Amino acid sequence: MATTVWSKGQMLFGYSSRLHRATRRFSESGDKGWFRSVFAHKLDARKDAHSNLLSKKETSNLYKIQFHNVKPECMEEYNSLEAEVQTRLHQNQDYPCEVVGSWNTWYGEQDQAVHLWRYRGGYPALTECLKKLNNDKAYFEFRKERAKMLISRRNQLLLEFSFWNEPVPRPGPNIYEMRTYFLKPGTMIEWGNHWARAIMHRQENNEAIGGFFSQIGDLYVVHHLWAYESLQSREDTRNSAWLKDGWDANVYYTVPLIRSMESRIMIPTKSSPLQ
Image 1 (cartoon, rainbow, N blue to C red):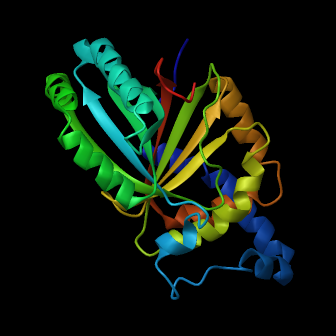
Image 2 (cartoon, rainbow, N blue to C red):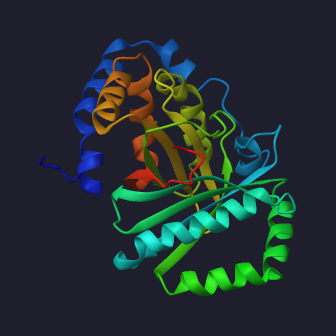
């Protein structure tokens, strides 16, 4: 089966025809009330840091996302080793961390593993976990063995948007898409304002897993995580969003906030809570 690979520029260009139609409809409607409603109830960025304004108040979850580029010949061995360590950490109640999901990239950067961790209790939980791991001889040996399999690795610390679902385990089989947006500095509040309304248009097929924004690492980065039964299901679900009132407005107003964007299609590993 032939596969079409889209570049970042093509993905942004793909919005152009829909955005053009949306622009014409907005400009010709003359409905000033509609424009006022778009900007109603906005968060005031001047009153607090965007991390406090946009994250969940009822929880103190901190997330870490890891991107590991693995030597192609080591992928199977790497997955087995990661699964063993993740299971051990899950079973040990002394570690205040849990794996939300683990995946291998299918389309996107090849031979890449992606892991999403949750620390219930925020930065103190992360600090406690790191201290315990530094004194864990088995974990030290794991890191040494894993290092032999890696080409490179990087991570980010994230908070979850207050208006997104909290990720919970789900049965499979599913494929997962991580859409990553690199925003222009200073635009995170505006992004949150628009997506707080738009997320309602993407709940119909239970595809919304979680939405996160970076705190440490690359800044002004947003990750949206989606689940689909198949690539065709993904296509159908995304196309159906354009039939809902308000979705075109969200795209129209958020695309100018983006410096660049990328999409990963990922397959969950056998040990991932998100299947």
